[in-house]
Image 1 (tube, rainbow, N blue to C red):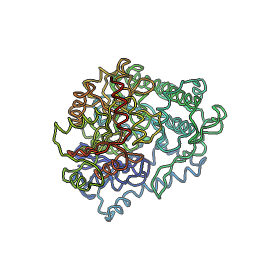
Image 2: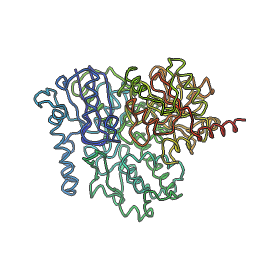
Image 3: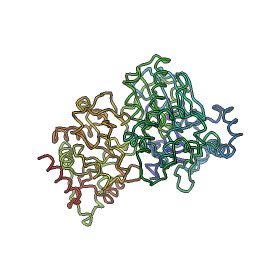
Image 4: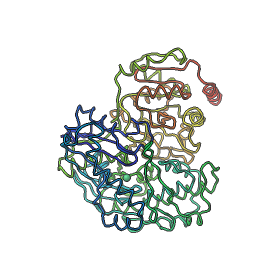
Length: 596
Ligand SMILES: [Fe+2]
């Protein structure tokens, strides 16, 4: 039984394939077509999924898409009359969905009649909820989906039990925590799709000075609901102007905050303008107000469901700062967040919704690692290594374990910046030790060095640590697993000096806890780093430079050549620059002086 899940005609286009109840492969189109957040039709992702199971399109039994035109059709029609431009855009997308069989056939140059799969339309939030609960370790749990907007709702919650879910409530358009966060992100001068992350990082630098005002903008409204004060926004009158440019398939979202918001909070920051204390305080207040509403929602859900386990999905589930507070502020004791919690994860969710809710099959799969993307053979990697010539100015050695980990650990401990490319690419937006750039977390200057030499991102954005699961309690105030970097925990005050580079200004870090059986090689590397430094932690940032995370070995080599990385570990090959950049030497010297 083959089920193909497809998130298409939307940002974060992706595909996933489930065979006999088990996920076999999942990938975002952006990793393959190299367009960040790529929207449109994920033909390459689908091809990859089919290849992974050795199937052809005609072998697929079910196709699942996370969109249901008939969901909330009354609400959709009502708003369509008020917002004709938005309605036209929706109709365009719906038409595309109606023709998905034809698009599939065209993409694979087949006749539509050859596709015998049954097509299933799964409501957007039902797919989000399925994407987390059905792959979680819990037989029973409360489930919550919260995002910007999907099928005219922004949130849905349920009780999950075995292969079933019972919906407890939903919040419909125009009230939306995702829209709220995006509107304020735009107000603060960050307009690119996906910039919400930046503002969450910025929030730690400010004080929540404007809470009175923000409690007017967004507030809890009963135990399982929240409301926006609509005069602050425009999406309810203009429509959330979400589209993608056909030419380059980059998603774009029009302005959704109103002149009234500027009247109340002062003029919006223009992109590139200096960030002032006021901006930092707005960011802090925006995060604090979100946390207030989420805490109320989570508590309501715990009370209503009677559950102590919680599964989260939807873009809001990426708010690792809020997620880290669940354990202290709500009765929930265990929380699962799927690595692709955003809309990419809908392909997995739609497929599992078919498997369990439509076909009634029992559950037999759990997602305890994120390595569902493309993987390359030793031979393929060797061919890329063979392209390196003397003009690259590097030394190459081939090593097996444990030497591979030991040498890499020594490089990290010596202050080198290491590109680490191993196994299958991660599913979801975080690099989790297979496509990562690694550095020494003990060096306070490492954040600046990484930014200057490789990542070129805003200075206020934190870098994250990976830590062996066994040592989490030694460094952090919480020990609940965070295998997919979806929780931020306070670093123990006495340890903040020990891992300053990934410790954020508020004393927290968005950690990845590394489990020995889920990520064996990465776990061994961290152990080797611990042997070198007595700190089994690395700073882990995604292997890229303002582009989607590298997927293929040749992209890793290109990124290594383009940036000032010191070492590239590509499978079993260690590629080291013979002449490290002066900044690396300087920083190593400064670190040595500080140690003395
Ligand atoms: Fe969504």
